[in-house]
Amino acid sequence: MITREPEYFPPSSGLLGRVGRMILFYCRAVGQGTILLMHSIANLAHVFSPRSRRETIVQMYVYGIKSLGVITVVAVFTGMILALNTGIALREYNKEAHVGVAVLVSMLREMGPFMTGLILAACVGSAMAAQLGTMVVSEEIAALEIMSIDPVRFLVMPRLVAMSIMTPLLSFYTCVMGVVGGGVVAYCLLGVSWDVYIDNALRFGKVKDLYVGQLKAVIFGIIITIVSCYEGFAATHGAIGVGAATRKAVIVSFLTILVAGLLLTGLFYY
Amino acid sequence: MIKLEKVSKSFGSSVVLDNVSFEVQAGEVFVIVGPSGAGKSVTLKHMVRFMTPDDGDVFVDGVLISSAVGQELERVREKFGYLFQGGALIAWLTVMENVALPLREKTRMSDEEIRKKARHMLELVGLGEDGEKKPSEISGGMQKRAGLARAIVRNPEIVLYDEPTSGLDPVTARTIDALISRMNKELGITSVVVTHDLHSALSIGSRIAMLQDGKIVHISTPDEFIKSTNPGVRSFLEAQFITKQGVWERKSR
Image (spheres, rainbow over the protein chains, first blue to last red):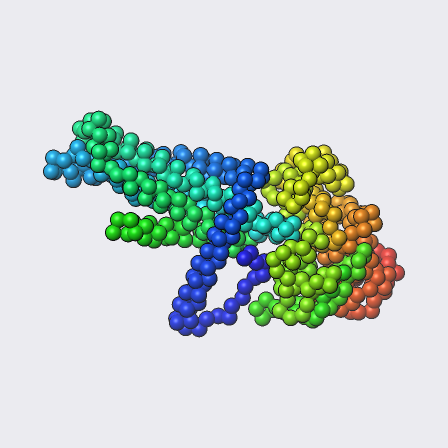
């Protein structure tokens, strides 16, 4: 999985050759990412060992609690923008009292997990890829292997557990803060009282929206961890390689979250 | 103990190792010298299967490590300690935690036993007072010594040293040399040292192999090495002001 051998490929000829190689590389990355995920899941039992437990809690704090500030700001403003846009449209039909349910359902189904996923991909995924990439180029990963310490068990598994727990919690927090932000706009700009706003939101909101959103968040957390760790482990060529791995981790996480979000929405609501 | 048989390795069109064969005997300090880019570190990486030869075999105690995988590879690797060029200490752990890491992860020793053993190893390499510092808070030489303490904490049979004295001042470099000799004499550890520091190679090596352009051009004891007539060896010796008499000689310019 983790190789220290530089890879060399003969230059591909023509457009077809380049596209073919790109597809092969993409398939290989998907395959190796899946193996990394399976390898991490196979090591889940070790999460109860004292060292892994401590490491997992540290990661939960670093990736979860330390992201609260930026998540709060983004969530409140997302809720405000949602309430303002839908409120203005609903006002034309004298239905602005229904802005609560529009904000709640949007946040629970899509915006909560999606915004949380994007923020974590940018803040946490980049940090993970940079950390593991630096460990690869400074031979710390090789040092673990020579000590017969599995780098996946030592590094990836605690991060996977931490992100699988923290992403849905943060997503729920994002939804709550979004609804609060929406409520502020509804009260101040649309003239909808807090009681009406909350009552309307809770009356029409469904439990399914909550659990589908939470499931999405768990899957986004897993995607961010596996993509970022994979890119970090694949880093080569010193500082430039670490920079490239970090950039790639964020981009691939973003795109994968978008595709996975669409598939999950289709699966549960289409 | 370690045997390379006709090992070849290329990266793209660049041949790094070309039909390299030699054997490291148990209990010796085997030094591989050669100019930068000669393939020294790549040779070392083949011994623990960080790299796989394109052609040829690598044996460790009769086990073909160049094709070993899974638990067999893990078993063979457990015979090794490895001192990396930069020490390769885990950045977020203290020096003491780094040294204790192999014991915590791979043994059933109690916390007290682990602490005692890690402290003993740190004292052995002269870092008894620096255990609570992070790797970034100590010098490069100290990081290498901490790396050495970690490499030997599980009593390996073989320790591989990748450029142990590079980037160090002469006094610290000789301290590291003394430590390698001490590990060999007191603990009976077989050592393979990769270096381009001939002063170090001549003072600690039981045998010295010269690697040039991916080929072994000379293997001998240090005394024979100094007297070698091989042009590659001679130019390497002369570049470091070493004469056939073994006296350090600074050439007039």
